[in-house]
Length: 226
Image 1 (spheres, rainbow, N blue to C red):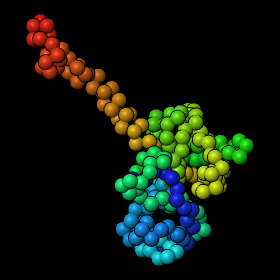
Image 2 (image 1 turned 45 degrees about the vertical axis):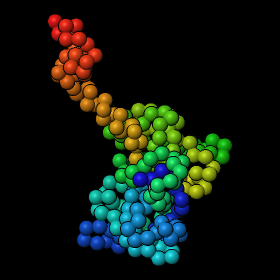
Image 3 (image 1 turned 90 degrees about the horizontal axis):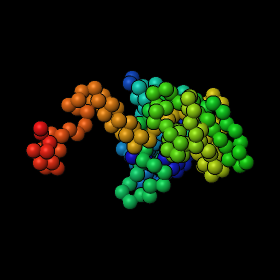
Image 4 (image 1 turned 30 degrees about the vertical axis):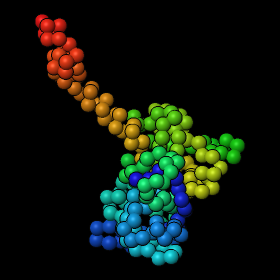
């Protein structure tokens, strides 16, 4: 698990294709405890496992399915990526809970300067829009952000000067592809509502009945079953 608080910007040094994956070599200076082989690191929002480590570089293997479903497959040497080590017990939760499992790829629609900040509109894939609401959370390229507004095609977020300086989001421009992970809570709530809606088609599954209340002891049998 992660919180969407980027700890460092890394630079992709090289990519090496393999039989079932692509190896990514990233220049980074994360603390020794966060760069051990086997550690999990979010790379622009994608949870990857460290397969090799040196003082200045980290190596990851990304499966071809991961490359296909995220922006990692589009990266070339020199690209900058957001890095966040996984949470440890006792770490502060400064952003929101993030799994590192990207839900889809969005496209930046516009970037509008607002003083020293930026307002960024992102077009969101249709299946993900139902999970986006004003004041809700969204993870964009591994960065936890608050949704300021939504429309029929996507959402808007505000990037303050600190976020622009310490993440790759300061380089966003119209047409840039970004990794998106919707809020876990929003996904679970939507699933519960879907299940209830589906159940409404069968009276026996539509919710509490008189018999349920009698069986649970909230009504006497004479009151409930007439």
